[in-house]
Image 1 (cartoon, helix red, strand yellow):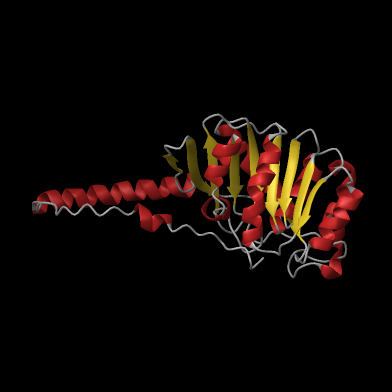
Image 2: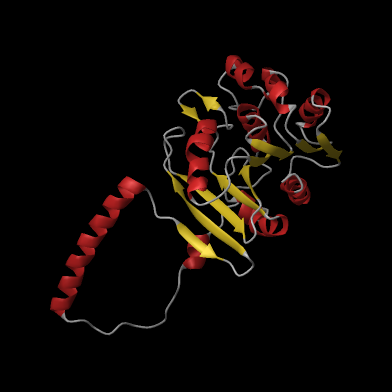
Length: 288
């Protein structure tokens, strides 16, 4: 999904503070004591990180949205710590989990698409986590969908968010992933799904490289095989006419005739996603 940028935010650079004050010289003995303390404290801190993972960073914004971020060491999607992001409006009426596209990351929803503003305008909390290149379904050696259900949702519940019934949104790979996950959870756990440029194919031969392990993997996890469960969930599909996945989106709408569709001009681009995501989220908000 090269047209959609990673959305890296460079927050570390913006958070560096130059005090501009030179400290007074310390005595040699005090310096030695401080060095020893620093070593001991550093060792204790590193031990805690090894057990608990990196610390959560949280910021309160004046605009009525609380933004948080942290890391999750997943047993279902192993190999690297997964970064998660969260924006919660002051008056939160529901939770939407946003799944990014291939080659992107959780920061896309907040640094490129301004998830904090969308949360404030819709009253919906927006939560996202890195899915790497998993295509958001069980693979050989990993299971991104289990990570979401068994690890990420409990993490969000622990922060006081309503996870009993959630909304899902996604773009490209994440559009497929949100529909797949909705088909796994069913209407009792999902109040609606809103996608942009969902990466949908009817045949394995047409799928993107690396999207599925093999034809059997595709057959097991095809969204089209879950139409029965999806038919009971409100779904909104947005896809541009020039998008390479337009045919798949139109095909899904034909077997889900109750789905809301926005098939208009546009391609597989960030500009298309930016133009439609706010409206898709407003549609989700109306379902709560």
